[in-house]
Image (tube, rainbow, N blue to C red; front, side, top):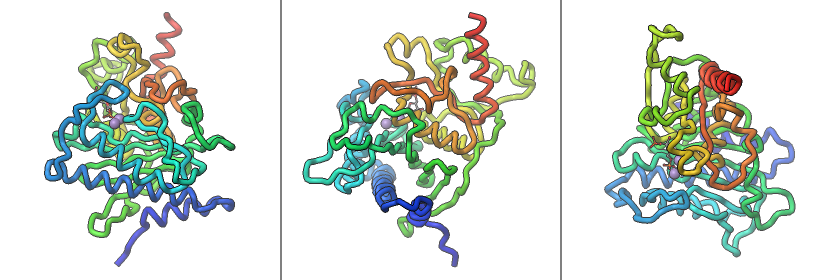
Length: 341
Ligand code: AHG
Ligand code: MN
Ligand code: MN
């Protein structure tokens, strides 16, 4: 019987690429994997474990937290705070940087995460996920502040997500391509099932929340209108649409079969004084790193997301990512609109 490559073996082999590696990074990733297994278990048990429904509290974004948002955040902190590999953490669910309890040693990395992505789907048993990004802690810093986390996405050491779907999966990049692992519940281990994931350059499938169409900017309206008229319009082909409303699930589909995912700027978001819907540090950046490593593109429509200099921990940004020919087209429409303005 063939066992295959476990995620532990994969992470250790990745670390061996670096002659000066200490094992720190391997151990950090293993702790993140454990945290995701624990969250997966809580999500799977759903109502049986009494974890569904609202927590009746608000996070820093002014969103009502679900019980599982709070539980997942706590589990992630608990699994990672004691290990000695991290200097600090930051999360969607915490306004400030999380300083490690004093009794634990400090490490060389910073961890940023969205403990539960797609929370509107929890109570209806649709896929949700966890997104994370690992950054280096600036040298000589023992008590990191918000400023230390404000690194452009190009600086990420590793990014990944866990998808709690019909199977639980973990998808990772350390800057050498993208690999997907499926949790084998019978042995409690993730096994490499999707080596070298690549996003096809072309697609006929888009993902966007169409209910916001009347609030979009002209280049986005132009792109979607052309998709909608299909073979009768300038594109000459029909398009299909999908929208799960869990970024992890939508991006995972794109990694598996191509597509374009968009959460653009719109007038409703602008009226709230926000820069977009999705958060730069723990949604847009890790997903952009993964998508680029799989041969796709990721842009705000005006610039490459990974090069944006973050200004705040919970900064939001427009996101257009996926199959490179379609993302390129949306970027071209933005450029043309700016030139004729
Ligand atoms: P979160 O649950 O972490 O707040 O993120 C939800 C995000 C993202 O996953 C998804 O793509 C988007 O919000 C859905 O937004 P709409 O409900 O506006 O479609
Ligand atoms: Mn999210
Ligand atoms: Mn979330």
